[in-house]
Length: 361
Image 1 (cartoon, helix red, strand yellow):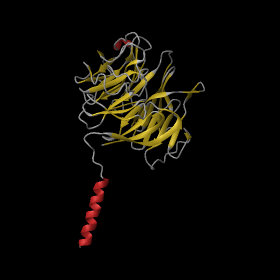
Image 2 (image 1 turned 135 degrees about the horizontal axis):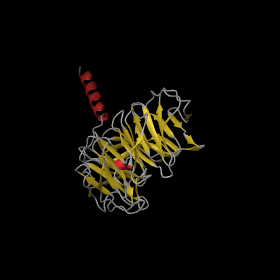
Image 3 (image 1 turned 90 degrees about the horizontal axis):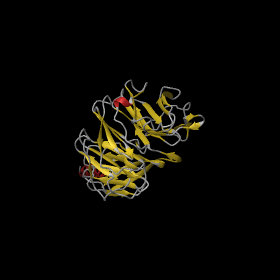
Image 4 (image 1 turned 135 degrees about the vertical axis):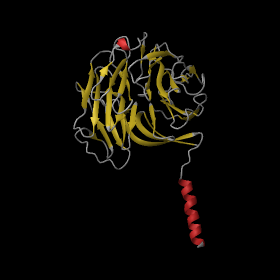
């Protein structure tokens, strides 16, 4: 009997050691390589229960998150590994570049940058990717994509006229319609957006916020899934083509955070981090002259009551546990974009790699 009790105690104690308890504050991040490929330059990632999905400089890709990956995609891709697949999409014999993607109900939507803007739908059941929207214009340049639900989605791009380019679907992505400039706020001179991390759009319920940048950097806001719009000014650094908001995230309908700066001056920390507590109507500069300089992506950590943020860029990874008032530099490892799986694990992508990030005490 004593032996059985000792054995049970040993098993219990060791199982407790293996169980991860999330700390109140993170002080380090552990990087686990997922995809390493020198041809990659990834600024858009998404995932579901089976796949990690990414858009790169000259292709789309899938990487299985588990050994359950059994779908035959040979008709669509070049197989570069057991669980790693590339989709090469060309236009006039040149590869398209993708910086905005979204996984919706088993389908991958991806829109290319530059002229022509081409939006594809890739389905497991389809034998070929389907072109569902095309826009030919010398000024066409789509930057980000997001969905309100399985049926309704939005993609935004630089102005081709005197307003931001906004296309919307209401039928599960099968058709897309570009909004008229008569229904959108007019852009200012030199105002556009950055295709830096596919995070120019943030959605909470029916509410939508779109970040612009450049010589003018503002917030476009819609309370009703893109049917009506208004615009709010921000105090972030602006005035040059390389300045402004590069990334935006909202924790709930009221609390949001935006980051950016000037990528040509990545160490500058003045006026590059802003926060709102009134749904984006007004913004305040935080951690001015402190914390991270230019960063291309910021995300709230899930279930953090809007207090915890991670900012990422080619200069490294930074963490805040007080809604951006102060920051801890966790790593010099550079990435372009990040998405959280849960409250302590994320996937990040950048030049030549995609990694799993484990945040720890």
